[in-house]
Amino acid sequence: MSFTDYNDNLLYDDGEQFNMWSSDSTDNVLNAIQDGVDNDGDSDDYEDTNGNGLPDAWEPGVNGVGNVYADGIDNDGDGKVDENIDEGIDEQAEDNRYVVNELGIYYQMNWKLADKWELIQATRFDSHDRLTDVIEYNNSDRNYSPFNWKINLDKTDGVQISPKIGLIWRPRENQNIRLTYAQAFNTPSNQHLFLDIFVTRVVTFKVYAKGAHQGYNFPRDPETGQVYWKDPYDASSLAVFDPETQVLFFPSTDPKVKGHFKDKVNDQSGMYPEVMRTLELGYKGRLTPKLYGTVDLFLNHYDSFISSISFITPLVLEKEALSTDWNGDGIKNDDPNEILDQQDLETSFDHWRDYIDGLTALDTTRGQNPPVVVGYINYGEVDMSGLDMSLAWFLNREWSLGLNYSYLSITEFMNPITNTPDPINAPRHKGGIKIQYNPRKFDFSSTLNVRYVDAFPWSSGIYYGKINSYFIGDLHTSYKLNEHLAAMLTINNILDHRHVEIMGGPALGRSIILRLQAKL
Image (cartoon, rainbow, N blue to C red; front, side, top):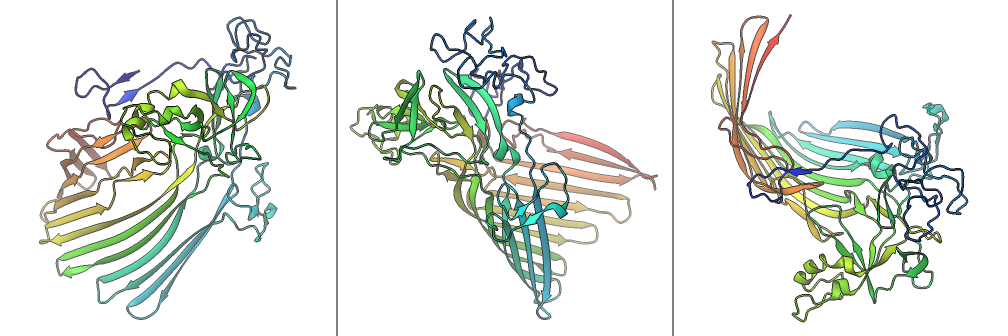
């Protein structure tokens, strides 16, 4: 592993580029072979003679180097022989090939209501076969013929309907004002829906990354409605979560978040599309014979965000992990939904490992520990407004000047799952100036762009931090050498102001690009 030590303090600081790599000795690669060995470590077809929950060398079903191997024997007595051993794309038994069908239909209509008024209406309909049953595609054998499809209009739940309506008013020539409303969806990806890989073993637990197309549903005690959990060192036990003496802890896969405590876990029936609704008021027109302008005001409403990979199955801890008065000020965090002492909470993140009782169970198979599952969930609801505006001023036939400015009402929002802010990875303020020169006497043109970007928080995966504000200029020129050859020169960041535009990316300085374009 390595990191880029920007400030030369020999320590890894927030925002510095971090790299990890390792060799892959498993068969989880393209053209993997089937060698009869459980290379990725997710098979339990061995006899755990010492009861430690791990395959040890020369236990029945385990070879001399501690790998479970195919021996044709049901060593763990579960009725299955050599399960999850032969390696294919991941494991031969897990090589599920999913066929996903999506059908979209779109229309748009324009009505001229009067000389100065126009109405636009458009709608898109999307059918995704993992989100709705309105169409039975009948093409699992990859026979994509619509003549095999069956449509059932009684099962329209889940059909994505994306309407757009706009009213345009043109008070005079080269002037228009528009009011529009639109709804759009971001459909879950195949990874969000079907991810299914074994990640690693942690002590006696196996960690799996699983998509959400079948949801995450926890078996519950019929009397209390609480989830079950298991002791990692006693796979035969099955206990019921007690919120009076225990608390649930969700570790975090996000390096800037330490985790969060809850007193209950909710089932998730499946994955839903992200939804965005937009209301926009805009103007575009000629202000004077030489000045043009645009202004757009918008209000966006987002809901059902799709999370990054997150812990689905929480750990069960003794409640003292959260409720201990670590700083001795007499204030305790007895309710994970109402944190009274933030300092105690921060300290609890350093001690939770000392209070582990077990793991919540998505699977209650006797004699087996439940898996640790990470996956994807829908969360959150955010309102965001903003402004975009621009001016174009044609000074004369050779010179023009352009201005633009954008504003966003927020740069981050509160994640209701982790109770920490999530950045939207965009600045609150940004703007620019463009000066363009096109002499009539020469086959030459030049443009100078100057732009300012305000500081803003940024996060994606393991990379997070603050993008500092920057102010840079770019120069673009072109010259026609003859009828067949032209030269173009671009100088980005003329003053060589080194800056970072995304966390994890390099610091950008001046770059010079020269191109020749030929026309035959």
